Length: 528
Image (cartoon, rainbow, N blue to C red; front, side, top):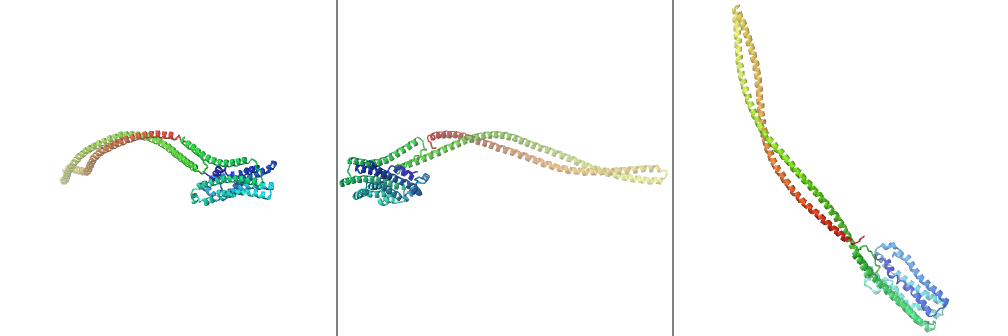
């Protein structure tokens, strides 16, 4: 960042002391050539000249240490150099008159104090004293113009330079214009001072105050100092330009070699500073692009590695899926066999149920025949009961007749009694047999009802078994077809996914090779 500190010390450190330090040796040379003092008289004058120079320098130090400190213009405040460039220069623009005042004061200290001291030290006559006193004011107009040269606002108002018409424009052109004027007037003021000293020397010689010794040497020295000042200014500006161009070329060479870490700064206000800022901006953008490319390459490398792992996982999953499909196919074959067996058993159950129904029908017929025979037995028992009643009635008549016969009919009475007992026993047995037949008939009738219900149940079971067998067979056939179609489709999808997995794996390998090549290319650049 171009700060006021860099701008001031790097661009004007060789020029700012010339208006304050060069006049003193020029005055000493003037006094020596004019033979104004000899021997030990020279030392106090040298001391006065040195004191004026030191006082001028001390005033600049005090000014920067105290006055500029509260204006935060970065002199003796390194931490302030981190602030924004425009903000710092704007602060300078708000207080430019202080630089002009300081320049005038230091000029007066460097020029007039030696003159006053020389006049007082030699106790010159009034007219000579006045001449020595008024001589430096020959450069007073130059001093005034120099004040304007150090005052940016005054220059802008005086010359109405375009860069000062709009206060919102970049401040660097304004400072560049101001420092150019400052250096130009500083050089011009020293040149005018030299010319004034030569004119004053001729005047002193003319009035007989001084006796010129080695005037040609004085002229050569003065002209040499003036030329040295001009040459120094030209060299300073030229070296600044060429040095900046060389530095920019060096930075570009580093960038071409892949070094994007160089952060060289140019403390200048000319176009080279803008060029360096552009180069540095380009370097930062390239460094950012390279870093982003490296990050992208690392990310792609990681993604390709992840993709390769996913492809391997997919291959493993496909292998396991194919194994499961084979197991499923075997399981479905077993289920198909079981279902076929169940269907066969259902048909067998249907046949057995039909056979059972036939047997039940036969049993029903037999039971019905038994029931019919029971009815016949009941009829026989009814006849036997009638016969028993008749026999009992005959026995009763025989008993009556035997009683009538008396003793002669006693044997007949005994027979009649036995016949009566036999008739009663027959009747009793007939009644008991009839009860048994009646119970048997009821049970036979219940059995017939149960067998009829069993026959209906067997019929339903046979129908259900037949229907179940047919439905199960149809379901097995349809399920077998659906499962086989699903297995075929699953195998087809599995094959396609397997081919896609191979393609992904190959792409991941190609991507890894490309990423490695990109990293090799990016390794040419150094961004850290």
